[in-house]
Image (cartoon, rainbow, N blue to C red; front, side, top):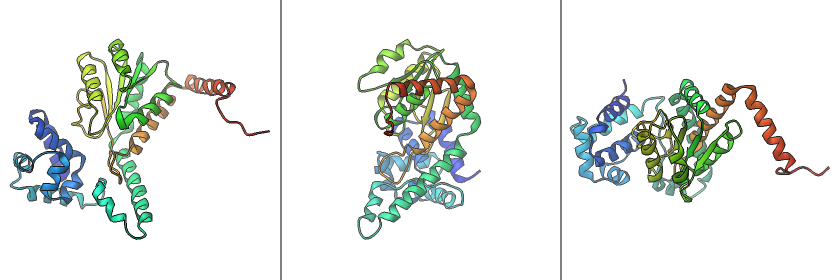
Length: 293
């Protein structure tokens, strides 16, 4: 087992007993191992939103004599082939301000997206996607949650699922629609939550409500320690770091496409008929542009 895998498993095993501030640094370390390997302890503490002394205590609890020893263990693993690198932070982007570097930045962006997709393919198995689609197909109703920056992914998922499933609802935060719809859900329904750190408090509340009321929920998130992954029926872990300062949604949308494709294949001919009929009606209503004849 690699150093990173060993450390990841150790963090996951110890996580339930950690203090809230230790859990915070634990989530950061699982999400951004390459930054741990690259940056000094003071920078890491600032990025994780904890004190330097907290990081020192954390690595000590993990069994390392110093932060440098801990960092060296990660460096050794992250330098080996096949281990994906996470994205750079906004400060690093400033190096592209001078000279003819825009092409290089664009190249790094697309390369990172390809790496993320490869990592997603390796991390999320076909059997997991199939189990998710089977759960969605059996559900009486499906609720989709994606607050804040995750709204585009949630909207897209709700839009395409509505073509093949009977009752798909988008839970929105600004209009608080989830407060009206969620209490009507029960264990025969399913809620799918898309959330990455910093986790929207409303998304966490939805996950906690589902757990306490035995409503199955699916999480698309960034680590197994994510608060929306706790008690999830299925947790699909995807990378979220890109070359910009904000999370990339490309891996999430890839997983969404896989779910929809698998769902259509699972349902069969009736799904094809529903899709054809739905688009035919939209065309009859004049929703789509037609080239002049």
